Length: 354
Image 1 (tube, rainbow, N blue to C red):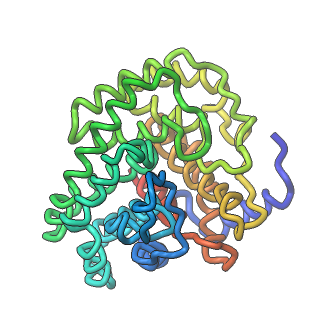
Image 2: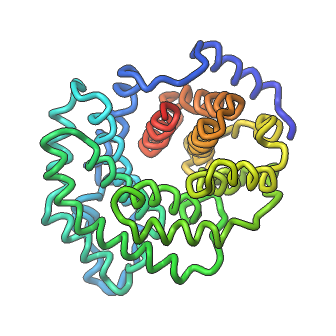
């Protein structure tokens, strides 16, 4: 792939300015990233509902349709905004804005609000709502609450549990019906959904974990020569090839994964930078074009997952370059809404530490 001189310059600048061979999820980053989620989880408008209207009675404001997750423009962004805040409080127990964040979390994640969310998912017109991207992030939120060592966490997690149980069942039922994997760079990419859900399920739901293992092997075992040089698509925020590889890294023994990766991405392990240029964003005020910053973050976490598993520093270094390029741009003033990118950045930081 061709690399532009401008992009190389930006990458080198990023590496010099960060001056490190690894990423650190420190308090400075937490204080910078938290406000994106904090400011949006109770910001109702602008809003993209994404649901199906059954009749006039469905025409309600977002706060009434989704009383727990009505902010941050759309449902899934609200969910991972909550995940971002919980994760930061878990990582930094003495965080300066802990009380303010906790107050917002308690206001949204109540038993009454969650029951209303369940009613929406049980509605015949919206039974597939947020499949599977939002479902996966909801499971991530539950995982974060379970692992947050704070008195508030148990109450919030108990309130969330009925919705978690509902979506875990839906996830299993969907995989039973899905014959062919969904290989795109946006929300419905099934490798992404399964990967996030698997992190949760292998700890808390053996049935779903087993189903994900079964379907990952069914979908991907024979895959080879993934066209990584075709990526990215113009609106991608996920890498179809790397998300699949990340999923398989989780379900295959290390040696089996190494052999599989050699067929799936020939040569990638030896020289990953040969096959991936950092995604360039030309207009961050365009929400769909800004997806490409999300792609840089999601590529980074996939590269960290695989790099750590394979002891491959080249993958880790390439992940750092992807992260730094887009992280430096988040507060540029160009974004119509960078709140969702904060979640991607936090997740990449978490993966860089594992």
